[in-house]
Image (cartoon, rainbow, N blue to C red; front, side):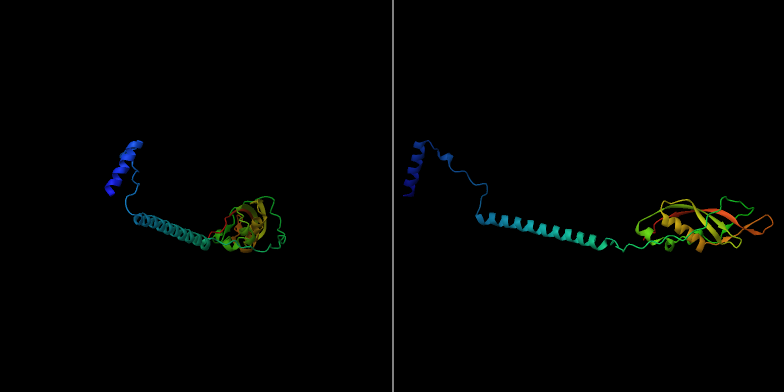
Length: 194
């Protein structure tokens, strides 16, 4: 019976101009629907896994950035007091036969503890040249700024450090007696690095 039905279909196709070669094309996949479904589910699982891995990497990077950043300290605005009056520098430099020499290393006078805290917060740097008067005992009697760093705090700190911390071997005249003398002192203020 099946053969008769099949023959009838072929005859009907031949009469209508449809050849048996024009049958429906084969699908692009051959096999059961279970295999295709398994393939699709595997691809979806791989994509979800990749998404999870990249999310974890990004979270780790964000955590490293958050924990290693330097917090900005927000301090209340300090009350600025006017700098103490500084005696005027000598009008001219007098060169004695033997000039005054620094005792020790002048760089140690201007250590990180000498840097004004407000200047550090404002990230101020610069070069100051001061003129000092050194007394017969080797102590600085007066200080004045010849070339400003452009930051008043650094200029005031330069003279403050020279007056409080510096020590000099006094200048000597031709007879070897201690005399007063002037000297220029350049100071480069550089922010302390951690």
